[in-house]
Image (cartoon, rainbow, N blue to C red; front, side, top):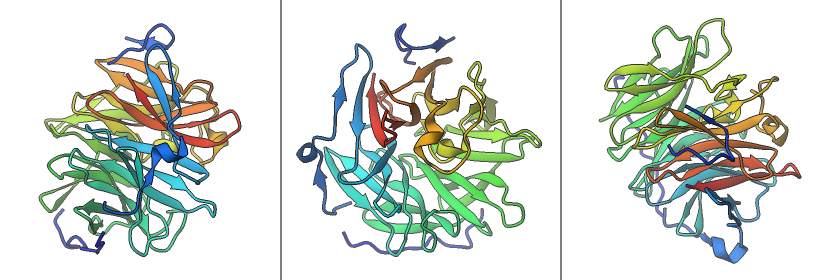
Length: 331
């Protein structure tokens, strides 16, 4: 691939219910064949079916988004702790690294294979100097919301509209954004002290999370036709979409189905990504007004991150030995 930077203009203006077993409440780079490593371990269940996704030779894998043709993007953590992006397409893993970056998680993919994510040229943990990026037709473009301290590009639709969130320079407050036709627009849930936008579907609907001032509990919302629609919390959830791992990783498809995660007990885990923080975490699907929990079989904890129009869900889980793996769930 002939990768190059094409920095976006800095001055741009701005249901599948599961059966009774589940709780139910009303780019051309060198690839690695999946089959060669035997890493798609299919666990047959009556309905649905789960498959494990492990980037070959690496210690931890998260599958973060999936498009209509089944292409999956995500991130893996290598032996020295660096977070790297990847594309899994037709059984072949392809690494994705922004040139010069030391941190490149890939967070979203659209129907035509365009990829968005975040990167840092200076910080392996992705805490400082975080910038969004777009990978389109082999070319990387950096995405920086004007005047922001950090920018993360999380979702992209077929039209090329990009959503994510940025932090301001003064207070580190989170604001959602839309980048469409070269113009940025800030998005804040009415009255919220904190807003993240995660995904945008091909109909222009957007999903995210918010919280109000003085309240550490997050809530989900849908933005459709210019209207903010607050979504109910999952009954008994101690936290919806906890910051780790769900701040940058939750999904929305063209049918309006949403996937995320929740904590069912305290302490609510908002710390750095590690296996221990999954002990009270479960994946969650909201479809047709019905919540369905998603738990990888025999896992310590599960998080759901992406869903395509066919209802296939991707995410990650922690196995009994404490290792972190990606997964795909087919309805």
